[in-house]
Length: 461
Image (cartoon, rainbow, N blue to C red; front, top):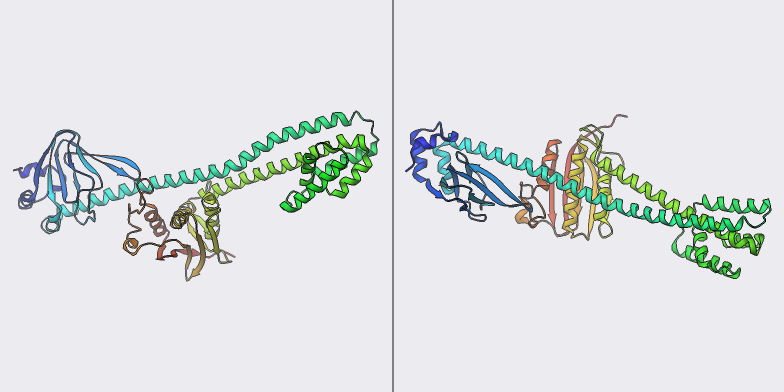
């Protein structure tokens, strides 16, 4: 039998009466454990509260796809606490050294709260501190996961224009070389100034042409017409030249006049030079477009993270939603259909832009998951009194009634191991409450809606 003096060394028991401690010891079981042995296993019923008396212990398990290891030592209390909703142990308790502990039946915790209110208050405070610290750590982890997804999406989006630019620059070198070869031949031919000026004028026209975006059928028809015309004038590489000239919008009549005016000997190198110039123009436009796309992606990323801006600012919720959609473009296209129903007048709220973007990101990603990546995402904004409301809805399978009341609980998740931490919606609710708002959810098969209500601010006129 353990002496009450040994238990009083532990701070939580130090101020209890002898009668209270003896009552506790009357139901507690002393357990001796050897190094490496397990005193409770993950998945066991949550039937015990543990008081560590001697030795070093460790809680081990898997959470959010990662192996966790939480140390514990003599003098600490762990396991099931009063008012805990835990039904099974989520980790395994292991003795790191030979040790000794007390285990108190969780079934008697209601009696403990009545007989030992001081100990109950200490245990609840411990539980609150641990939940708060655990939630803080996991929310930080959740933010890092979100940032990782954002970085992955950004890398994916940046890769396309970057790869296109690399290909374009390689082709640009080839086009310039074609122009140099054609020039070497052309300038060996005695040409009148008027002919030179005509060639240079055509080249300038092609280089500055903005007729780069014809539809496929029109472009194909023009290529065929130019190809026939060039073949009639004995161009062996007519198909290649016609493709370059057509993409800058050279008409069949204009090419016909040019071939007639230049004559057979001058036309061959002149047309090849013009085709090279046209190809350069097209490639430069492609580089310009891809560069703009990269700049736009960086702008979106800066807007999403609110880099260089104050922690709290006026946030236009529609702009915030559109920025978030832009960062998730790699998940939305092409199988997710996005429907927007936004108020024309801006709805602004006062808050931390990056945190609100995290709310939209979590809700939109959940909607995408609910449709298995192939469905409808509906976004709506409206005013209701002093609130601005953002509704994010999907036509997925819905949230089962059995779990609907738990979706905002910390660590609750329906996803498999490694697929989620169970903090997405908990984080969403925490952020929304921090901004003075609340979130409402309704769900049935084919129609799940999350409404975020935030106090709005009036813009000064």
